[in-house]
Image 1 (cartoon, helix red, strand yellow):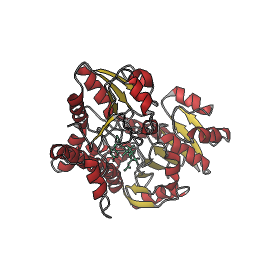
Image 2 (image 1 turned 180 degrees about the vertical axis):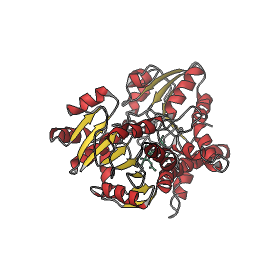
Image 3 (image 1 turned 120 degrees about the horizontal axis):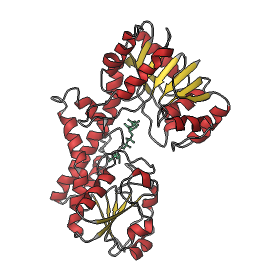
Image 4 (image 1 turned 180 degrees about the horizontal axis):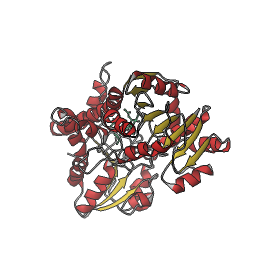
Length: 415
Ligand code: SAJ
C-alpha cells in the first residue's frame, strides 16, 4: 500500500523509513526543500542511531522518496511539530496546514492519522471540520485517528517497532483502519480507543513524569533546610516495590515534558492545579541552582558550565534548563564558560568553549547534563586546570569521585 508522511523531522522521518522497510511505498513530505533534496540522495540531517543507514537503504531500493507536497496515497500520517504560543497554549498552525495540504490529493476510503502531539479534542474539534468543509465526511468518506508518538530520542528505530501504540479514531471504523496500519510492523500491542483518550493518554504519560520530577525537586528544597540527603531518601523510598520517585535536577527540558502539561492546563486551568504547580516547581529549578552557586562563588569567580543539552548523550537544547542557567549567570555578571561535547555553536546564542578553556581557572564546575563523557572524567586534569576544584553535579551523574575535588550534588549541598 501507499503511505504519505507529512513532516520529516525527528518523528516523521524515522516513521516513514520504518514503514518503507516494511513493504510500504512511502512518500515523505516536507516544506524544507534542502532537506528534501538531501533525503533523495540518501542523506539525513537528523542525528539518530541507525537512521542514516536505514534511509540510504530505502531510498536506494526506491521504497522511499521525498517531495515538497503530498501525493495520492492510501494512508496519510501527519507528524509536524506543535509549537506553543507565548501564552503556552498549543499552536496548531502546522497541523492545520498539513491537513489542508492533503485536500487536493485526498480520495474516498483514505485514512488520515495525526501523530503530532495535540491538546485533547483536537482531532475531533479542529481536524475533522477541515475535512468536512472540504466535502469529505470524516469517519465515512475518510477515516481519521490520532496515534501519539511515544519514542525516546536515541532509541527511535527500536522503539517504533517495540513500543505499544495507542490508536484512537473519531469512530470505530477509523480506529480499526488506523490500528491495522501500525499492525503491519509494530511488535508491541496496538491498543484501540477513541481519539480523545488517545490524545489525553499521551499527554498524561509526560505529565506523570513532569509531576513526579517536580516531587523530587520539591523534596530537594525541603531536605536542604532540614539537612537531609534527598538522593539517599529517594533511593531508599524506591526500595519499596510500589514506589518510583524520579530524580531531581536543574529543571525539566525537552519538547515534551516541559510543554505537554500545558496542553492539558489550557483546556481546564481551574482543575489542573497539581499539573500547574509541578510546572512552576520545575521551572524554578534554574533559579535554585543559581542560588546554590551564590553560596560558593562570588561575582568575580569563573564558572565552568558542563552540558547544555536538555538530557544526556543527545544534542537537543530545546527548553533546556542548562541554557536558562547559563543566561542567568551571565546576566548576573559571572564569568561563565560553557562546554558541551554534542552541542554546536549555531544552537546557542553565547560563545561555546572547549573542555580545557571552560575549566581553565574556574572556581566551580557546574554539571548540568548527564552526558557519559562527564561520568568518568579525569579528575587530576580537572584539578590542574581549575583554580579551585569545586564540582556541583546537578544530575548526580559523576561516578568516579575523587579526594582532590570538592564534590557536591543535590543530596549534599553547600553548607
Ligand atoms: N528528568 C529529570 N529527572 C528524571 C527524569 C528526567 O529531571 O528522573 C529530566 C531530563 O533531564 C530532561 C526532562 O526531564 O530535562 C525530560 O527527559 P525525559 O527523558 O523524561 O523525556 P523526553 O522528553 O526526552 O521524552 C519523553 C518520553 N516520555 C516518557 O518517557 C513518558 C518519550 O517516550 C516521549 O516520546 C517523548 O517524551 C515525547 O515525544 O513526548
